[in-house]
Amino acid sequence: MLKPFDQLPSTSRLWIYQASRKFSLPERQLIRTQLDALCEEWSAHGVPLHTSYEVMFDQFIILAVDESSAGASGCSIDGSVRTLKAIQQEVGLDFFNRQEIAFLINESIHTYAMSAMSTLFVNGVLNGETITFNNALTTKNEWENGWKIPVKDSWLARYLPKSVVAKPSH
Image 1 (cartoon, rainbow, N blue to C red):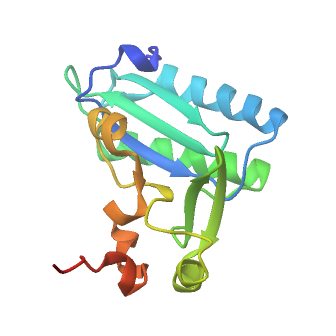
Image 2 (cartoon, helix red, strand yellow):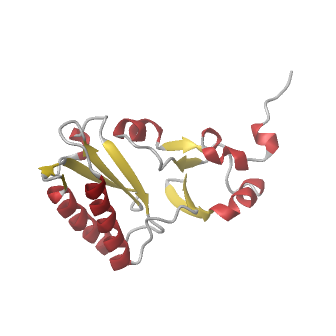
């Protein structure tokens, strides 16, 4: 059962999908139609799930399930993945490439290849204060409080030049 996202409890389980590029208006409409259908029909072992989604920055899909009444099963999660794969095939997106990292720069999403991280930090394109996204979060509460974070507080901090992460000595 599709519920308004803001009405799902903070304990709701979620999955974050980052697209390879920004959605066009027709793609956004198709994605919303497909996700509405998924959420309306999403069930686990015949029990309807309370579900919702958000489309953020026209490049991220956040799926959520309130597991307080029924938990998402492996089969139901597989069904959601099939929906995302069908969407990506239909519109030519990739939701499963973990080698592209997204950053929020001047209120716009920029994605860069993982292989370019060191160079981007050394050249100053990215820095410790640049906002990145933690797409590995698993609850709505975690997402609300830690999805957008500075690079220095993320796993990407290891790519920062040593002078940036070294603490000043007195």
